[in-house]
Image (tube, rainbow, N blue to C red; front, side, top):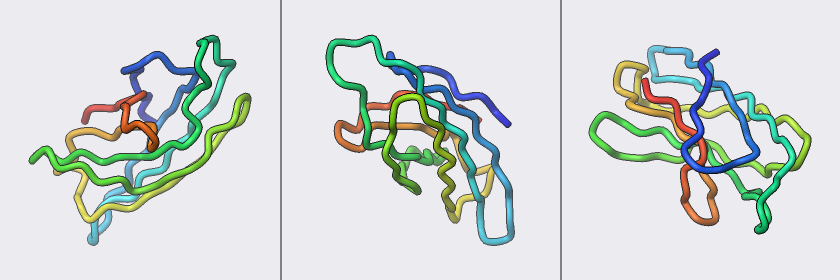
Length: 103
């Protein structure tokens, strides 16, 4: 389990696990939600984004974030672990990156 780093103020924390296969990589995320202290509502439509070393970004999973809950999204990419520069947790509404793990 690799912890993700906060990029923007967020009530979320997450870890990822990467599993390399002949066809690419499966990424499993455990994302927990705390209490939101901001004035605006927290992002609720979330996505897992894979960034390749070439800079291309691909969204591989989406889910709804709810306060005081844990989500376990998974996604697949044809990229192998060595070809992945980062995995991001982003708001699908705004595209804003909330958490990131660089590899």
